[in-house]
Length: 219
Ligand code: ADP
Ligand code: MG
Image (cartoon, rainbow, N blue to C red; front, top):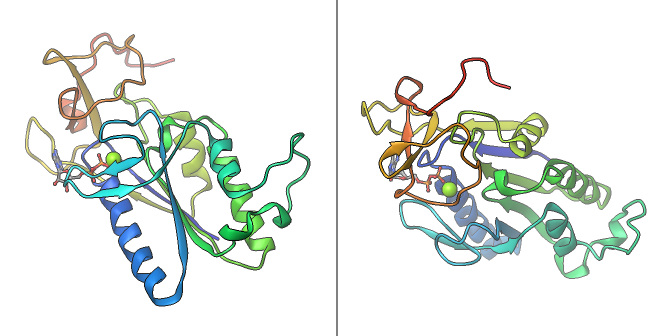
């Protein structure tokens, strides 16, 4: 039914929110057999393949996928030529799934929002509610939107925008992810996708966010 999004810069508590959702789902599973599935992106190997970890060192085992369709094919028996989908394609052992969680949504290709909407529709046609939670960065290190998350955010029923503590002024107002290369702000022309943690990234407020060569009017 609903798509929830946990977004904000690095260190803002997105994965922590995912860990909380998973903890609640584990309790739900023990009480009423309600199933859930958690996906991560294969390229996020910071903590080992298929491991989602918060910076508070809590860990969740997830299914690593490289594409949005990979999420779909985990849940459905996809036919070769992809005709219109119908609930009969849902793998029988996964019909009890009530919650689907995706971390690092920004790493997925642009089909993620459409794939999640289709999965949501199939569950509704089956007469069952699916709760979808996506965690991901809204902005890259330059402060530009990640297109996949821009699309997912537009489809969401509820969005939590988290903030972190700015590593320069100490205020709890950091909305930006600061990339540092040898302690210096990265360049505007640097590649957007570079996986890393504290050695490469910190959180900063807009006032202290720095990108070498960033134009005021972008694009
Ligand atoms: P995200 O997935 O958004 O990167 P996490 O949930 O993994 O965030 O990490 C959030 C945790 O990181 C906080 O609860 C806090 O313990 C720790 N932390 C480290 N640096 C910061 C910071 N600058 N601002 C806020 N929390 C931080
Ligand atoms: Mg995270």
